[in-house]
Figure 1 (cartoon, rainbow, N blue to C red):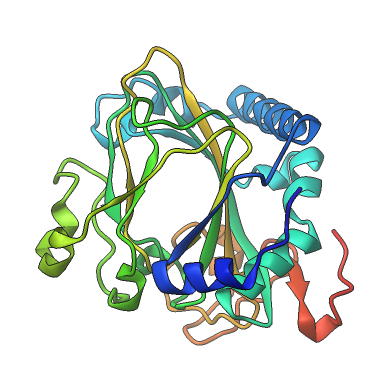
Figure 2: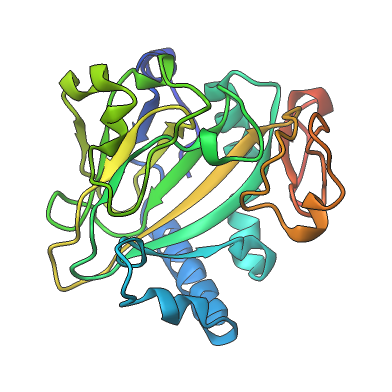
Length: 274
C-alpha cells in the first residue's frame, strides 16, 4: 500500500481538490481488497434486502449505483484494511488536520447500464461542516469513460459552500450549475484509473461519474474521513441512530465505537487499529 506523497502531490491536492495515486495497491494487495469487499458485500446482501431493492429499481437514483455502507462494522478484513493509521495519516496530511476519524465507508457498484452520477459536492450532506472533510475512493476494477469513471471540476473546493450539494436524482448531471453557474465553464478532469489506484477527494470539490455502458459491473470502495475535532451540525445523514440521538448541534463527533479515530498527531502518531 503506497501511502507516500510528494510535496508536489500535496500542492496538487490543495490546488485542485483531488489527488489520484496510481499505484496505491499492487498485486496481492489489490486481490486482498477485492476479496475482502466482495465477501463483505455478500454478507451484507444475505442480511439486507436493500441491496436487492436498489438493484434494478424503478427510480433514477436507484439505478445510479448500488451501495453498502459501514462494511467495516461487519467485516474484520475490511476493518483491518481501512482503519490503517498509515492511511489515516495520509488523509490527515492532505486535509491539513491533526487527525481523522472514519465517518463511514461504502462500497459502490455501478451495475451494467447504470445511470450517471450527477455533479455534486459531498460535505453539505454530512453531519459536520468542514473544508477538511476528505474521501478516499479506491478503484477495484479498471474505471474508464465507458464504464463510469469519475470526473472532477478542479478548484471548485475553493468556492463551494455548505448550503448546496447538488442532486443525485433525475434533475440532470449539470443541475449543480444552477447554483454555481460559473462552474459550467470549467473543463472537467476525466479520471480514468486502473484497478488498485485510489483518489483522495475533498468534501468540497464538485465531482461526478459517467454511466456504465458495459455489460460488467464497476466496483469501487470509498472511505469518508472527518477531522478529529469535527462538530455536529444537526443533520443525521449516515450517523447511526444511537449516535444521533445523543447529539446536539455543536457537540464534537467523538464516538469511538461508531466513528473510530484512525490517526491523530495528538496521540504521537502511534495509534493502532481498534
